[in-house]
Length: 160
Image (cartoon, rainbow, N blue to C red):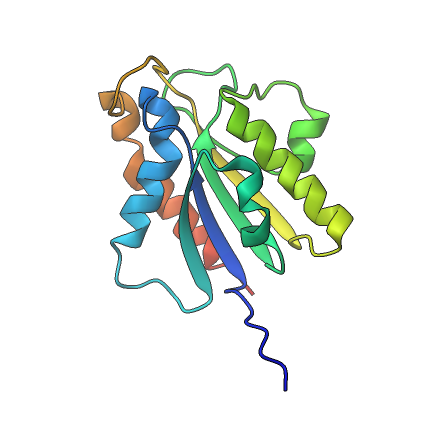
């Protein structure tokens, strides 16, 4: 008898550092999504914080991963980005705002090596206004949360 438990095929992963103002936007969006009562059974939402390599077990055997994070793409504060890990590799415009983002890209690469990579990975990023040592998002970035929530919902609805 096989007692292996398979995770939900779609993982929503909010990452960020709560101590660095807008760097926390991914975590705050994950929190908003977790408050909803209409999350389909095929979706799991996790606050990944700054876990980095500790997230590798969470992404294994997933069909689709949607990562939400603060991303410096060089645009106006509050700008919202949608891209894939391959686009990061091919376009140096997106700058990592913290070490955990490098960890996210590394764990995606490790999942390739281990043979259980997600079939699709999408990243939603919000251009931070401030990443100073301060708890709480800037008012501008706070206003972007509902828009990113809607984008993430539309993205998970594309599955399967």
